Image (cartoon, rainbow, N blue to C red):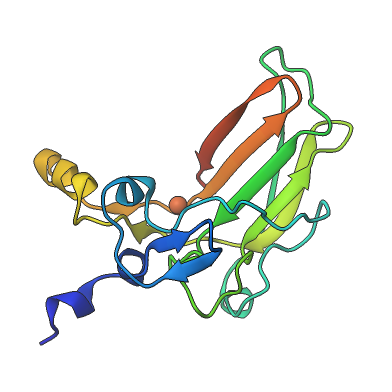
Length: 176
Ligand SMILES: [Fe+2]
């Protein structure tokens, strides 16, 4: 029989990332961090990458399912936005972000891309995994109150910025 702490998913146990110090802190997430989903935080200085580059450089690249992610950034009128900056980050195939996992270098499974003349971006990676959000704080009380489980489906995080356009944060689910 395992102690309760041993049954907690690592995404919950090692959820705190200190943005100012640029390092992981080995403690559980509570309150605001829990609502944000633990380690699913943007980096202040994500790695800039060329269109088509791999964002996976850790051991998950050998284990995971190779995936090509592509998209297009348009304004509300459907006009392509060249030069838009697409900041993307994801969990690996075990549900852990680089900020939570000592087996990944910071910046793994992240990339900062600039859209081409047609507003397009694309990159190579592995399929992310689902993971549980921390349940020891406000998010946990809310989930229990409405009878919901803590698992988030596999997804990619996006933060898209472009000149004269408000920043957009988004989570995108991979197509099956
Ligand atoms: Fe996430």
